[in-house]
Structures are given as C-alpha cells and as structure tokens.
Length: 289
Image 1 (cartoon, rainbow, N blue to C red):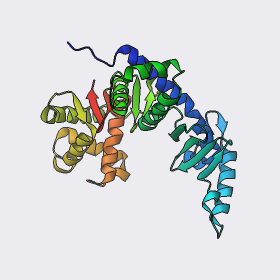
Image 2 (image 1 turned 90 degrees about the vertical axis):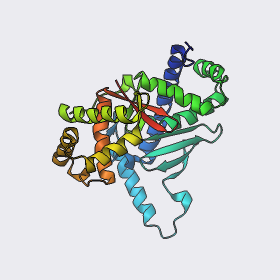
Image 3 (image 1 turned 60 degrees about the vertical axis):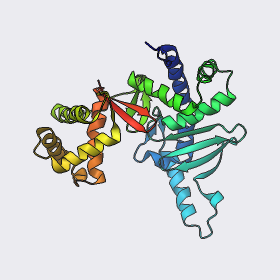
Image 4 (image 1 turned 135 degrees about the horizontal axis):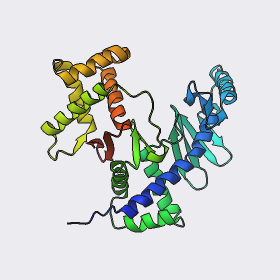
C-alpha cells in the first residue's frame, strides 16, 4: 500500500500554520474596527471592544465624504495608509492590508474573527514560504512541499485533509479551527436534517462513482431540481414544508433564494458534524460521516 504523503506530522504542521494565520489576521480585525466598522452591521461589541464610538465616527466621516462635490479617490475611507506601515483597501464586509515594506498581505471578512478564507490563507502562506523560513513550521513545510511542482494545489490538498479529519470545520465557504467552533443554537428539526441527509445519500448512490465524496455544487443543483420536480417524495416534502413555514423569504421555487435555503440545511448538517465539507481544486465536496 502506498504511504499517504500528507502524514500526520504534515497535518500537524499545517494546523499550526493555520492557527498562526488566524492570530495574524486579528490585525485586520482591528483595522476593520477602526477603518470600516460598517462591516459589523448591528453588532456593538467585537472581541470585548465596544465599537459604537468607531461606528459613529465612521458614519460621520463617510457622510461628509459623500456630500463633497469634488471627491478624490485618496479621500475615500476605503483606501489609505493605516498605522504608517499598511496600505488598506476596505471592501464589502472586510479589508485587505498590504505591508508597505515587506509586501505581506492579510485579508479578512467580518464578522467572526476566528473564521478564515482558505485562499487568503494560501496567499499568505506562499508569502511566508518566501520570506519567513526562520519560522520552524514554515521551514518544515517548505522542505516537504519542495518535493512537489504545484505549491497551491498541495497546500489545498493538505487543507482538505484537515477538513476531512474535522480539524477545521466549514462555515459557509470559509473555515474555522474545530477548537474555536461553537455550534449555533437552535439547530434545525431532526426530521428536516434527516430528510436532506437521505436526499444526499440517494444522490451519492446514483451519481457518485466511488460512493465517497459528493461535489457540493452538483448536489445543490440536484436538490433544487428535486424541489421543483419531485415534490411527492417524502424527504423533499419534509424539506419544502419546513422552508414554507420558517423561511418564507426563501420560498421562491427555482430561484437563488431556494438554493440559499438548501444551503442553510446543509450548514446544519455540517454543524452537527454529520457531514464534512472538504475543499478541492474545483470547489467543495461533501463527505457523509
């Protein structure tokens, strides 16, 4: 039997690299609090900081900028220099920081300071592999990855192994260390969770050749088709009844909102650790535990 190249030692190195990145991205969390606190919507506290004064200052300055007749790009609150050392670009519900001298790039989206984006992590790790070989985990990972030609694919595969082992867990299309994860309450009714799980099992038996990993996009498309065309099926009926009673905003059959409703149920399966999301080169896969 061929030995798995992503050994437990490599997985532990990757876990530490992820944990380091999550700590490092807290710098972006602080930048968002100071520069772009609109990202937190109705929140009044982030990491024990009362952010209301920051929000008041921001909206006052933002309104002043909007009312200017001669707007200049450099006056926009979205871009500028932060703490003398970082270029910032605020976007959506997050921010990107780029160090002026070193080129280090950090990026994060609100609201959860513990959640990270796998591609922003990969970009940062690639920078560390070129600039921070003094770090023991970076050095050991660099020595191992030098055996492969495509760094990004190997890093993604190693992240996938952490997901498969539930060392990291998915929240939507982002990730969190299992040690930082707190399952939200309340969970969905058991019968709804079981119904979608049965639909996933049916899909796996009919459409997945190795009966193991299920492409996330393909399954969601199939589930949405069944919600349109297979309404007499017991599992489909259970899901639709729950959606119609609890998610009226998502009840537009065949629409993006309907797919969002499916995603909500899927996330509950993930929260319960009944299903694991695993990243791969084409997106995400599901594994039924």
